[in-house]
Length: 309
Ligand code: CIZ
Ligand code: SF4
Image 1 (cartoon, protein in one colour):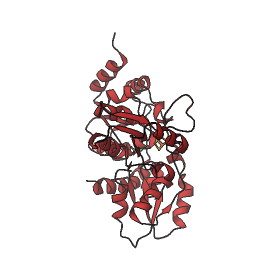
Image 2 (cartoon, protein in one colour):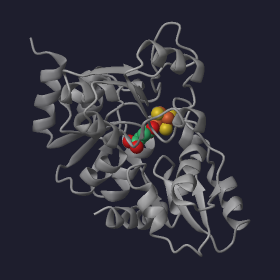
Image 3 (cartoon, protein in one colour):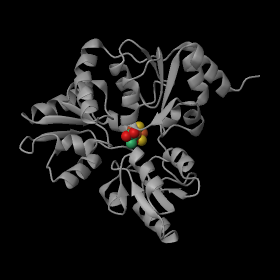
Image 4 (cartoon, helix red, strand yellow):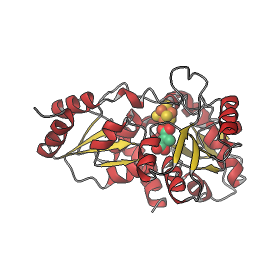
């Protein structure tokens, strides 16, 4: 009797499929993936994919990005309801009015948004390349940044720009409790606090290091310290712990953590190993992006990939 994991690996081979998984996926899914990474790494991997089918173990906007880059491949997502509070905080018809109210602005959008929003943008960015992409725009040109206001504030601080920010945020990264974080740090004073820039300003102010998910993993690997409190989705701890088995990694506490000491993205966790298997077997649910939107959304994504080389 084959295990679910073995059945998925066999099916993947038979169907010439690859599995791209985000760091926030449950460990069992990360284990069977061909590639595990953050939004930028996953987009780069999707851009060079050779397989006939891309199973995207992540959330909807990520699978959509893979489809925009691979119109002739089948892109499937284990659960179509795996959305994103940040992407949902930016409805296209309202964002269009926001852009119209700020003429002559360059529109930079964080990749955590829908294909329709990307189609309204000049350049897309991820947290790994956001500062670089903002700095690629001449200083005299005003910028709209959407949808994440926390990341936008962080970039404004870092670059001295005064980008106009859309008022969106991520439920997971806004759930960290400052009081609990300070109390936890008192218990582990030798631990370094590291945070993702989607976190709120008061959380970022406590951090010794701020970076994207892949930058946080690199930091934990290369820094001389041995203990870290990590303020981002707790799924990242699986990959990070594999890289540094000897170090102590503690998830930052959130407000509603009576049962769980960490922040988890409910959307990301909608994907399960069983759903990955069913999705691969049935080649469904499939991601479809209308051609006109796809063509428009491809331009700012390709600009980002070009600027990230
Ligand atoms: O919160 C997310 O969805 C993040 C941090 C994605 C990514 O990989 O940058
Ligand atoms: Fe969206 Fe936040 Fe989940 Fe990332 S962690 S997918 S930004 S809801």
